[in-house]
Amino acid sequence: MYPVILSGGAGSRLWPISRSLHPKQLQPLLAEHSLLQETAGRFADRGGYPAPVIICNDEHRFLIAEQLREMRLDPTLQILEPVGRNTAPAAAVAALCLQGIDPDAILLLMPADHRIGDLAAFFDAIGYARLAAQAGMLVTFGIKPTHPETGYGYIRQGTAITDFCEQAAIFAVDRFVEKPDLGTAQAYLVSGEYFWNSGIFMFRADSFLQQLAKLQPDMLHACQRATADGQSDLDFFRLDKESFAACP
Image 1 (cartoon, rainbow, N blue to C red):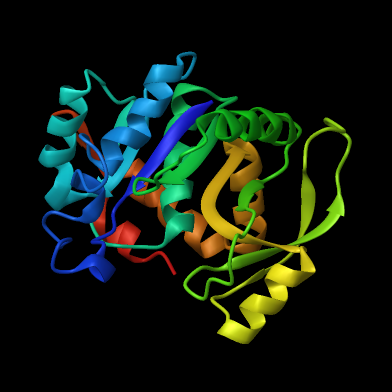
Image 2: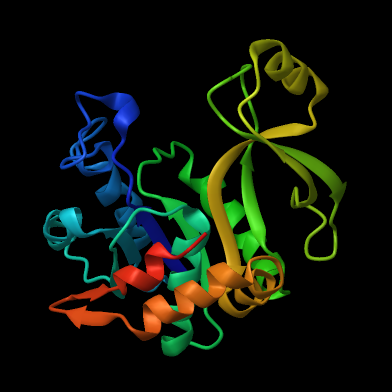
């Protein structure tokens, strides 16, 4: 299972601390290391995981490479996005690239700017999620809300899935909800049926690409061309700009 770290954002909500050329995930805001280093390091410290795949923009490539060297980490891939796109195209190019390395690859896709306090619970959740991902499911991670937060998206849980582990809290997704107003967020908290959307996902590369072919074929085609026409540049893989920019 390959950790895939998304580090393309500018972190503009923390301006002026976070700026486009030195975004929050590359700064030591909460500890000695940057958020990116913490994200990559928690898997290196745990052991048993391949080196991470990093997806970032061109402007940050050397800064990220240097931060990884400080951690003595040599990434499996460092993929450069020539233009900013959303999570799905980033996931698609990571899946396409990793399939060339490992046809059975499972991806754990996550932002670079999370701070995770309870690592034991985090890795327990990863273990349970892996069972579902190996069976072909696309898994998203929800966080149990502690207060009515209006700045996060939410996930409403569906029926429980006990095929893999009866002790695990694995549910079908009923729906995703964008950032609610305060009254709605309070109702979500009381209901116990909603989780904060963490932005962390796990899936087999082939399962994700099959679903993308059904639901977003134009996006998949653009990502396929962007990777096929991409070029190695020193330690980086640079996606083809024209093709990637065509992603809807």
